[in-house]
Amino acid sequence: MFITLAPTRAMSIIARCAAAAMFLAVACAQPAPDPAGNDPNWWKSAVIYEIYPRSFADTNGDGIGDLNGITAHLDYLQNLGIDAIWITPFFPSPQVDFGYDISNYHGIDPQYGTMKDFDVLVAEAGKRHIRVIGDFVLNHTSDLHPWFIESRSSRTNPKADWYVWNNGKPNRQPPNNWLSIFGHSAWQFDTQRNQFYYHAFYKEQPDLNWHNRQVRDAMYNEMRFWMKRGMAGFRLDAVPSLFEDPQLRDAKLLDGRNEYGDVPVSREYTDNLPEVHDVLREMRLVSNEFPGRVLIGETYVPNIGELAKMYGKKNDELQLPMDMQYGMLNTLSADAFRMKLRDAENGLNGNAPLFAFDNHDNRRSWNRYGDGKHDAAIAKLIATLLLAPRGVALMYYGEELGMSNHDPKSKEDVKDPIGRIGWPKEIGRDGERTPMQWNGARNAGFSDGQTTWLPVAPNYKTVNVAAEAGDPKSMLSYYRTLIHLRKENAALREGTLKMIDEDNHNVLSFLRIGAGKTVLVSVNFTANPQTIRFEKGLKVLLSSFDGAGAGKGTLELPPFGAYVGEVQ
Ligand code: GLC
Image 1 (cartoon, rainbow, N blue to C red):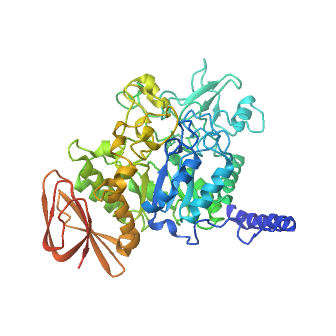
Image 2: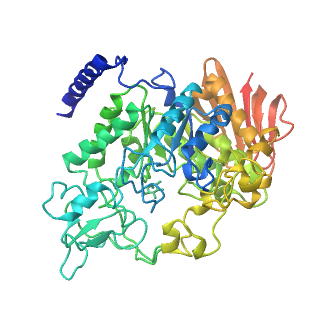
Image 3: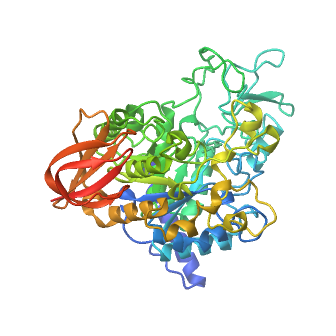
């Protein structure tokens, strides 16, 4: 049934264009061309850069980053070599979850700027061949969204069924034992309706009822709004949480206590229900209305089989569901990374995997993988694991500098509500969201304001763009060189991946083969030097250590050394 909608919509666009053309000189051949180019497959080997707009660059001195701050740094991003930016939500929001609680899907929160600023950003980014990807929060809205205000106003209003409502058990007891991902019961009693509503996250983030056709259509129109304005697609937030068991069965109790002090429960009735795929297929049809758009998914799923399903049986769901297993291994083990890479090679039906190590929800990789002694070498190893395999690489602002977590020291300092609910076991996500470190001046060049919304990390005097840009051995230079290498070298960009030396527990090695070239990638996962025997001649393209010259026969890797070289 849904398939028939596409031509109807196309026809209505043509009709609208014809009407507009009577008054305006508008070009309506294509409803919304991709502002950054015409290649519909641009994303297949892309490097995408996540920007947390509050923390990237502040141009109006209020201590909070803004859209103009992103525009001001597009040359930096172009020079780094990235293909697209994904900006976390900048839409009107009470900011309970710093933008992940949206009260209007088609506006800009004034603290981040105006619609004009957005248009300028897209146009300027397009000139630099950088696409702008939005963040679509589909599982829930803010409790201050007009839809929810209407829905909670009575049990009979037109939007009464737009959220997940239930009478609960007698004596105001919630319908079941489901827990919010952010701690405590997932049900909130509402005194206006005398009913409970479900919230997978904060109580200020009521879950939308995706069974409701009107909800779906309204949300798809919000997506169209942004794609018409030149958005190159979306990162879809919290994809697995979209549906819940309609029978509302109690979840199994698990052992112990979670960081919020609750007895944890299993999530089989609230996560990753099969209906999710119906919505993803519909969303893909919507995004297919616009050329060159991409759907990325925040897909925390338990295994590669579930991840494969996110692409769709006919490749008709997400182009890029995130592989959250690889970058979140949190252990420096050649065997573990080899296994995850093999999974991505063999388990995704040939689709491009999307790898990421850092994001706004997890401690920075510097802290998760560093050993306190070889942190810089390990960070370059991580960069190599991110950018040298086949697939799409997703970076997080400041990762390229070696930014590390700067965590709050006391509960009073915490901004992220989960840190306040769960302190001290769950300290929240402030530490990985501190301001971007542009230079060694006040506020690290992030803001001219008196204060910044989160404190700047104390290492900003040395870990910053200005200091690292001119240093060929810096983290920034390593990232930049590797990203450009990947762009220019067809084997690294889109070649196949072949594991070699597979019994080696200390060193992970693989070949990238394509366009008549072969590139060797070798990474030492230990704090000891390792020697690799390699029969063919090698020409170094990039290494994280000195002295990796041309050679034949052996390759000496220092502790945590990473090597990329062309096979002669
Ligand atoms: C996603 C976001 C996270 C947010 C949550 C609720 O996991 O990445 O930051 O808190 O969804 O919207």
